[in-house]
Image (tube, rainbow, N blue to C red; front, side, top):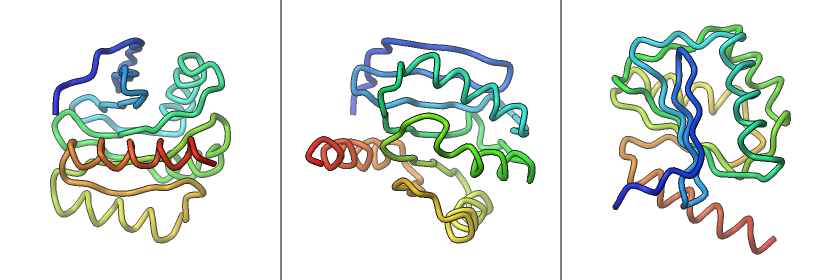
Length: 138
């Protein structure tokens, strides 16, 4: 699958956020990033500044597979789930430990938007496009 043309991009100390011409927001966490409540606060501000109120599909992944999310970060992300519009969230994991953590989050935090864990970017993109199609027919 060819890489999308990037139409908007923003960088923080811990992430690179890019919106492709496929209307999918990709969030790449930098190497060894620790995502805290403050990190999510900054990230959500970046999203709101880029999307102008338009809901998008989001794909989250780590540059090197070593991202960690703190407990306060997880709680903040859940509490602020509706602070910007979204179609769905896809998370790409590169190892079993991260897959278990992502599935644990999914089971106990019960996201209010479609949320799925993948091991391959292509699969996440296909799923996001399906979610976009479903959202456009509602």
